[in-house]
Length: 516
Image (cartoon, rainbow, N blue to C red; front, top):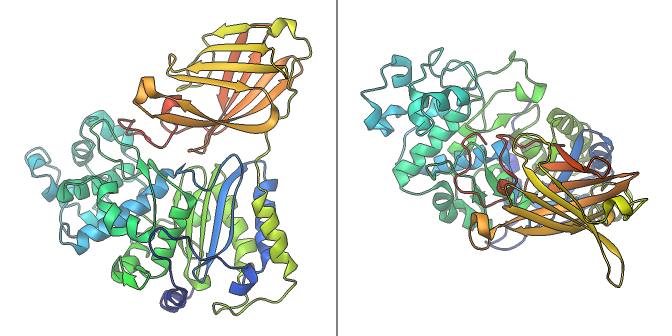
């Protein structure tokens, strides 16, 4: 693949990036050389797949947003859990730490933790460099998180350095959470600031990225390798920053040399039984792709940067079929950007295709759960109460009540309690439509703490079925109530990593598990 990053960066810089707080410039697709029919075809694949649940999409070309949409109940202003896409933000923090002389890529990791010098005796661990952990090349052959936490759950860096690498650092790739955690720990130690606080004046504010939230471990440190909640717009802005070689609004934020280093392969990772787009090499917390490069996170969180097309694709979703998403992008979006290499060059075709795409994007919604708004027979459900629900690890539905309320319009109401009463959700049964509730967690998580939950569902025969979508995450819980047995059960449609309690499925989480 020919690397045209320099010309693409110059192209994009001619489309002025906005000042902090301003919206990204938008454009009709054809004005930026994008055939809207290709974007429609991409949406067709996402929505037709039984294993892909899209939540949001932003497509940028030549510095302009040419397509954007959110599938209700997900929304533009909601932050979304990015999982390992968080790593690319951590990489950006490392760029500043290197630029400011706080860290050198050729420092040993151990040099930043001198209190461990006497206990870390393995020579490979002692030779491990910052550049090695930034590139997932610590010398370990496999993910080490569980073993590291077994060695020292209170200090994961100590546990990591006490786990001898299998090979010489820098010679073998393994996707390994403690590598990124260690990068984050070095930045935090050297700067005296958490990752968000460190990034805020350097990149978040200049890019116009508003509030973000980052999961912390039990010591209060932001994880680095996962746990960042940010909007799709924030993801798109990070991608555009890298596409522009580190420039934004006429200023250089990230050194162009860092962009080049972070987005090239450092250690080959082919032949590791990975999908094809996970076997193209790895940079500094960025994956190489068959086309361009990307940050990505579990369940379909993407920031895909396409220098040859001068484009960025930002997405959030709930899917384990992440290769299918990329396959669809390569099949439909790349050809759609084949015409009009210059900004404003335009694409041939019927301009009504742009209007049709815009109308579709404005009306996106996830299918709800079909069901009746009242049971076929009311008697078994009148003030029905259940306790001690069955369900997966991390789900503790402790009480359920279903009842009819006599109002001007008779309605059925469900009340759920979880996490020993810390989460109390009360919702009308309205069938397939989505209702969004901000569940008050003040008693359990402090003043103002809330978890947003969207609810859809109703009665299917004699059973009540509800889906609970935790809309700051990719996760959806299916709940079923059976009046005959007076029981309630639940199962994850997309299971959170680390089995957190329901109250933690939100943006502001402090003291969450380092396994997230």
